Image 1 (cartoon, rainbow, N blue to C red):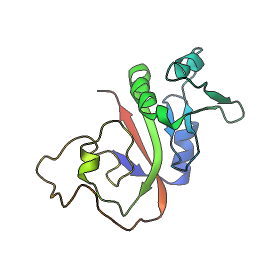
Image 2 (image 1 turned 180 degrees about the horizontal axis):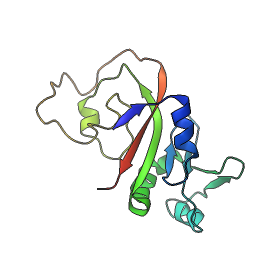
Image 3 (image 1 turned 90 degrees about the vertical axis):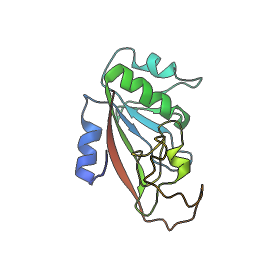
Image 4 (image 1 turned 30 degrees about the vertical axis):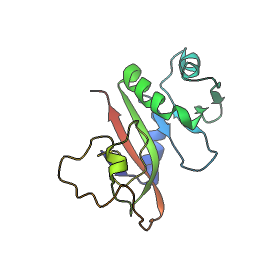
Length: 149
């Protein structure tokens, strides 16, 4: 379940060291930030996700990796660590849509914050169209803890 998060809670999630954190800023050109519990092979483990090399930010103690690795990072973190926090942009005015409910992968920017993502329509949704327009609220950050089944 996703939750809107205040700054002090976000800092606490980011600074804890037991559960990995994936941070998607949602801004064009920004890398995906990954904080991992310490393991000696973290660099090679991350590097195995793609062609690019992960970049270590020694001052802030996080990895910068391509945004395209998001789904792999979530899947592999769930396998390796059993949990992962996902911090990502959230917009209050969004509505869920068939495009979200029928999506694959973990990246979700609609108002359901992944609650309906890829789950299909169980009959409780009235589908107006595949896409529709809406007014966007201010971009905020939300955090969800994903746990392996």
